Image (cartoon, rainbow, N blue to C red):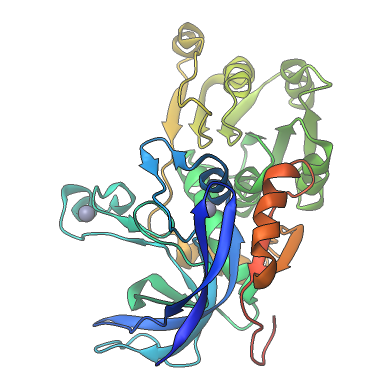
Length: 355
Ligand SMILES: [Zn+2]
Ligand SMILES: [Zn+2]
């Protein structure tokens, strides 16, 4: 496809301007996707506000955005798994396929991964992208494009639930009710956990957690979290905690209310990247501490769970903005964190079909 497309370019901290860029041509094994929805991730907001996450530093001009869905509009050479017109969601990370981790099936740990909107690789707040056909997953008819864009964060939630071997009979706690905490809660439920309690300090987020199926919530600002979790679990504590807030306080209290032999899965990054924890208590209780970095081959399962009605992605988004309003959406994501639980950008209107 010839011509130019609109791209939203971060030019400096807290500034996004629109630019015309050439529409990319799909190479061997790639498809050209006309993007329809792209979610705003906490990492996008962080890059926009602070210009870096750890050692990843934005060098403007830079395009943010990595939670995407769209329609295949052109096939590169050798593509057999997709056709023009297919509705797809995009897994953002291209890996080398050759290193030790790729060969072991731990491809999320590939040192050469090129991931949308992780410097120096540009993201997809733009109208088109050429992407590996193998990383574009067809959406069933009953999964909307908006849900398709949210498969990316849901995959993180499923990876966290998998790391914790979540299943029936467990009592779980999720700390942090932002997007990742909420999708982790839903992934736990989809894996058959019947009791999931959610802890946060913002009522708006806790309301969202209840709306999406949490079995109980605790506001850590007003309640004694430890006492409240013990009360909710008849004094037994939690079998599994997924920590999605990045708060040291949350991790410390999780170590307190975790059952002996329980697992704590750390998903949230703390602001400094460091936390001081009561490791002695972890040893006394023989706790298992695990971590999560993105996900590996979870899209098919996550899409299936949404199609089967086991995960409610429809009601996760609190705010949807048109592409033209992306600068405002990013700014409000910084200034209005307590109100916007999850925002997504409508890049283009879907042509026919459900939206
Ligand atoms: Zn994300
Ligand atoms: Zn690799």
